[in-house]
Length: 204
Image 1 (cartoon, helix red, strand yellow):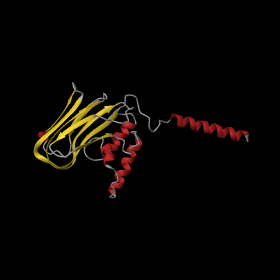
Image 2 (cartoon, rainbow, N blue to C red; image 1 turned 180 degrees about the vertical axis):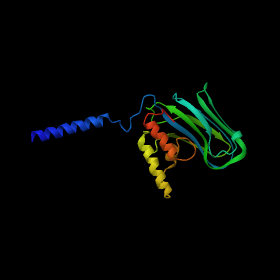
Image 3 (cartoon, helix red, strand yellow; image 1 turned 90 degrees about the vertical axis):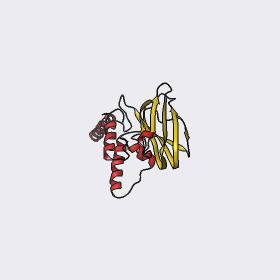
Image 4 (cartoon, rainbow, N blue to C red; image 1 turned 30 degrees about the vertical axis):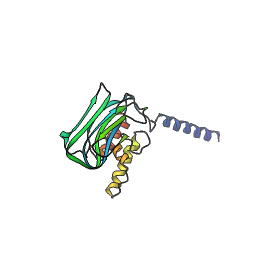
C-alpha cells in the first residue's frame, strides 16, 4: 500500500512539475507591447469638414494614422503627428460631403503591457453632427484584457461560424480582431495573434 501511495505521490509531483513549466495563457514575452487602435467614428449626412486633435498626455508611442473607410477622397483628408505638441491632428474638407456611418480615421499606438485602458485628450469641430471615438486593444478579440492564443482560436471559430452564416462579433471585437487593419477579421489576423502569443513578434 505504501508503495502505491508513493507511486501516486511521485506521479502527482511530476505532473505539477510539468504544469509549472508550461507558460501561463496570459504571459507575455520580454520586449512586447500592447497595440491600440484609436478610431474616429461619424454617423450623419452632409458633413462638409471636420478637424480634431488628440493630445498624447500619457507618453504613448505613436505608430501611424490613416483615413477610415467613410472618407472617399484621399486628398481632402490630412493627418499628422505633431511631436512638439505630442498630438495627432486630423482634418477633412469637402468635396465630396461625407454621408453615412463609418470611420473617419484609425490610428495605431503602442504602450507598455501594464496599460489596460487607453485614453487621449480628444476634441473636435465639425460642420455638422458629432464624432465618437473608440480605443481598442488590438488582438484582444474575446475582450478579456489579454492578447493570447485564445484570441486566435476565437477567430478560427468565428470564421467557421461565419461560413455557416452566423456573424456574432461586436463592432469592438471586429476592430480588435482586424489586426492587419484591412477591414476584415480573417485567418491571417489569427495567425498574427498566434505569432504574438508565441513571442515571435513584439506588437502588431
